[in-house]
Every structure is written in structure tokens, then in C-alpha cells.
Amino acid sequence: MKYSILIAFLVSFGSIVCGFLLDVAYAQKLIGFGVLGLVVFVFPLFSYYRWKDKDIKDYMLTKENLDKMRENQKN
Image (tube, rainbow, N blue to C red; front, side, top):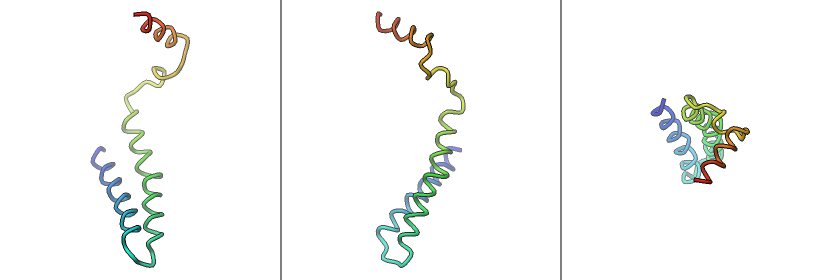
């Protein structure tokens, strides 16, 4: 999964760079497809990969978590 995300990132980023550097008629399309690849494929896959084993309740501001934060600040 990690390598497929890296490959998709490199392809998308390479498309953006080629769109800026090459003087061809479809340069704007290269930039657009590169940005689309980042937004539609790379970012969601990366987010899923990084959050798949985490519990969302650990990151929410609930009463229990606020109490834990206050306890940690006192120490």
C-alpha cells in the first residue's frame, strides 16, 4: 500500500512538473490531471493508510479526554 501511494504521488507530481516545464499544447491538461490524481487518489489513499488502525475517539474532545489533558498539565 505504501509503495502504491508513493508511485501515484510521483506520477501525479511528475505530470504537474512536466506540464510546467514542457512547451506542448496539452501542458494545462497535464497539470490538471496531476492535481486531479493528487486529490482523488493520493490524498484519500494516504489518509486511509495512516488512519486505518487508529481510534477516532482518542482524538475527539470528550469530557474524559479533557480531564486527561488537565491531569497531564498538572503533572
